[in-house]
Image 1 (tube, rainbow, N blue to C red):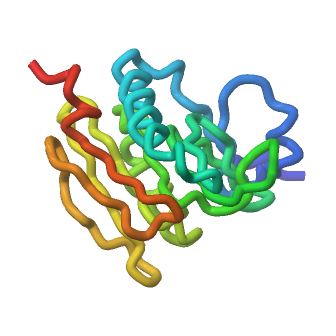
Image 2: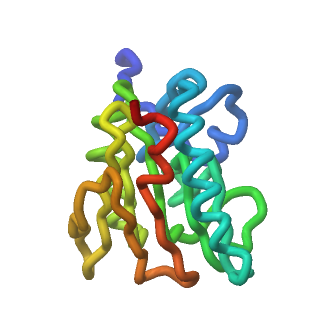
Length: 182
């Protein structure tokens, strides 16, 4: 009998549900989430939730959520920082691709957010993926164009209108980043 190797361990959603603490599950691999996000990270997430949420008064189909589990498969479950989801009926977690996913980069998650999660969200057909860089006060916006993400640009003080969403959503990045400008 050989030694247990890390590559032999493959967790499922049933395993995930029993864990304590903050985890994501990526292709059967347990990934510990960073300690509680820094104040700036939390404040940016709150600003984004407020910016999007204020536009949903006349759209009962959609909601903006922070740090909600998105179950992609039995061995992959992610917890994006902010999502716009429309028509989701499951109560425990998301099972339908959100229309917008926003991840706020930290040094420990940058590679994962820019590569691994990017590929998953693209594959799952999330219409828009936004990566926020808190230290640069910059947002990179990607729009799904067929099967691949097309970069819409880097946004610091500009607004972006999300055409491919159920509700008419616009994010004014000047407002989102305003309190952090010196």
